[in-house]
Length: 292
Ligand code: SF4
Picture 1 (cartoon, helix red, strand yellow):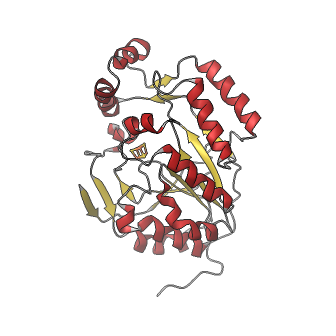
Picture 2 (cartoon, protein in one colour):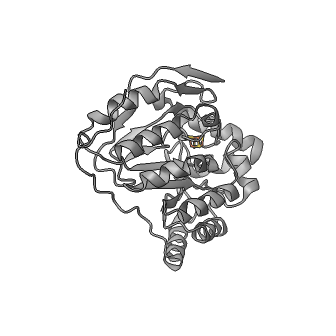
Picture 3 (tube, rainbow, N blue to C red):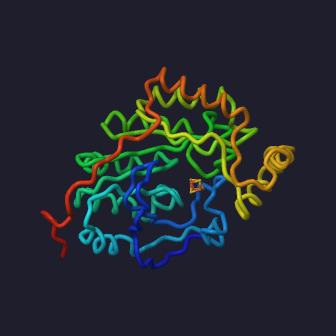
């Protein structure tokens, strides 16, 4: 179900330093996500999203951003995509992510988008404009195989479509990368899967890969995931129970060897395993654009 809501604030401060992505601010225009990945951490109780299959649309997002952006003292990196995908299919109707990006271009804020969707290509021209400051687009890929991805990420575009989108963005000079996380134990933690993702990422012109080889599981998220495992991968729940019990952190099988394989391939393909940090520019109030 799609519901329209009014938000109170759009840009939240990210605790510093953000060693993973170098973000200063975070933004979620949607709450809930139509991609419905079976492992999604946003189902955890701490995020207080009661029904994750509902998508809440913050329809006043653009008005809020017009107020918030000029008041920021630092033109730091704005991230989006940590709690819900900014290109969840409802974006085709509302275009709120697209409009937000136009504002970021106008105010010359750098942006880092994390997504699983080639729908990001609709905003290619705006991203090219933002990239005069800095635009990163990072695609999450957990399975190289389209059929496997359709099981674990049923509402998201196929990985092959994501790799095609990476190639287009990279060809336009956008800083393009891959987040290799989570990697689902017993399902995605093979050298073949990791190797194939890195090969296709390299072929698509990406320059960095940020990895976490394993997954985390807690409360509601675990219950939902185990229910899906029973339907999609019979018997695998028992292997999780035996190996991880109630632990939050669930590393991949043979994780040491898998990391060695990952690093060797990254070196061979010349893929960085971290993102170059963006140095924030000056205050936002110089040369402000004027709104009516
Ligand atoms: S795309 Fe991200 S936010 Fe959306 S369901 Fe998948 S993991 Fe969750």
